[in-house]
Image (tube, rainbow, N blue to C red):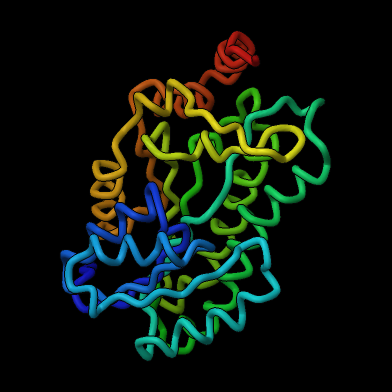
Length: 264
């Protein structure tokens, strides 16, 4: 598929992967709808994009998933249609399971899972009616492999795989595509904003995140994967990608490796 002339909706578009996707896609004669909670940052992203006249801002909060049906109707009205939804918004975690308040577990699931599927379900009838559409879902390598300090985050990403693998089969006859993308470490503020056990942000960047792929490099790889209608793609460094295959073929070995990871 080609992105030229398409209307593309991106959540989590105010920074990181979402921002770099917006900047890169704006080069391809697309019409973009940029969403996140922070309208001021969305305006800044819009200014960095090419053809800002083809870009609309629609603030939303994935955690308020009951509002997303109304937001979807607003999004469709902006350009008259939507062709692609990048479900990119989300939040991470840095805390041991034993130290994590259940309210934090719930918030992570509300944002990463329920918010994402609520937005998807709100747009789904429109995609079915037009007999086309693409859902791109930002999961994580942790969506395939649970690691220390990320129990609820991993759970929320694993849940996305279950939902969207099922959805892909259900809507195949409607010409609707689903791409699940699993990032490894990417140089964004995901670790800075990650929730600790009491729900406060970690407020520091992990060294692995700091040394990860640039958002620009990641976005180009993701856009290429969507163009080629990949169902699931791992975009990461060698070690993260290798771990996915070690789990598949040598699960006990991976379990031993995971146990040796630092948990403090």
